[in-house]
Image (cartoon, rainbow, N blue to C red; front, side):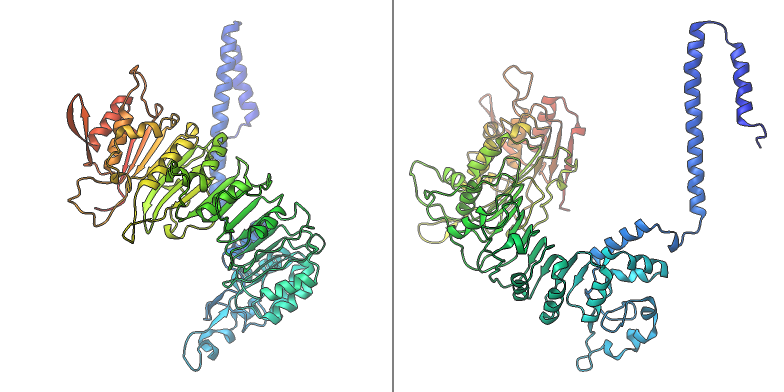
Length: 625
């Protein structure tokens, strides 16, 4: 037990120490440094002990719901509201409170045995015996923990602003009452009653901030045409069957804050009035159109989007006809994200007409389209690059620095070449997760991408003279080579390739073929190679998918004429190999002698030529076989 105060204790110690020191500058200076260091160490140790004691003391305390801070409670409610919203259909049992049978969502009603599913005859359908579904209380059940949580939730109006209109009218009125004139986010699920939806919208349209509907498009349209919605910022129409959407002609007056429009399926393109404020619409999404729009309609719509930041058009682009037709150019200097899906030449004409800024994020889904016979001296690859707009796109983004690049080619119903590029230098070290879209269904390429550049090329089948069609590799191989030569590879430090599904079919492909297409990839530090796992592959076929990567290993081991640096990727530090067959082999000619080189031998050549150890190679197999 310490009885002497710290002040007197240290004063005595310091006084004795000071008397022992000689009157020498060097000695005193060294003493000052030693004392400062010792005091810092001592204070750091004391602070660590205090922190540990505080943790133990806090852990020994009994935590109750009442001790939860208000800010954390409200954040918790907001989080639960996103994952368990009001009005979701659920099985009505003794554990789940439901809306239809409760007069209110208070704690007393949820605890009452009157509403136990086991004692409620309405739990089962009297005729079929099936379990009935009811609209659940969702996130609001957490407010029943205690009276204090209940009062906190009721006093916070923003927790109740998301209102689904498939609830009964008494509940809707109670929810609207709890919002206390805060802007509302209205949702119309597919089972909403049109009469109820119309009544609520007519009464509250002046407070509505966003509308998301899966039904009742007629109700939404009539309300917007007959009522002013001064706070409406977002309109999202998700309908299975397309229909026209008409917006007020005086949009600047009737919908002054409308910024975002999302239409899942329409008959015709929305008529955006030319009188609207030029900067009004900043986000437009149209996912399909029942009829192909004319160039005039599309031009009129895009012309009014001078300040759009997010433009997403799928399966609604006009038929551009022959490529030589002049295209109108649009000035969308504020565009940050562009997503297009449609026939190859249609997307190509559209992206060149829009001319997105070099810094914009671009996603293209180029659907199969047969090339028309044009210039006999022009190859199909040149036609494809020009008409698809890729030639223009890759030249335009040449000033953009991409940090990571992945190119993959797969053989599904059609050849699919996928290009993914990221600008962010904070690329995950685990490259199998580097492509955020890798989990998609390849036959249903659609929707936004998390990449800065996403190009999906779906190639057509080549027709045979005697009828039928064939999948040849000439076009995808040519586009692959042009992609690597046209993209700005100098800034790429992470390169991922999964292209061995079509390279084995190219008899003329060897290690020299890699040199011109990867000549500009001088900044690559991390190279990932992925081999396709082909189930049921004929073992009698002498050429395996991984063999083309053996050729790449040989190319990577070549040194320049001066013998000091490698010809390809001189700064390469790491190799990630996924499902590469170690026994894959190729025959190469060295000094008039044919040598058989395996993947393992070629890899050792790469490491030896660069002075790298085995730690620079990461090998992974995703298949148990």
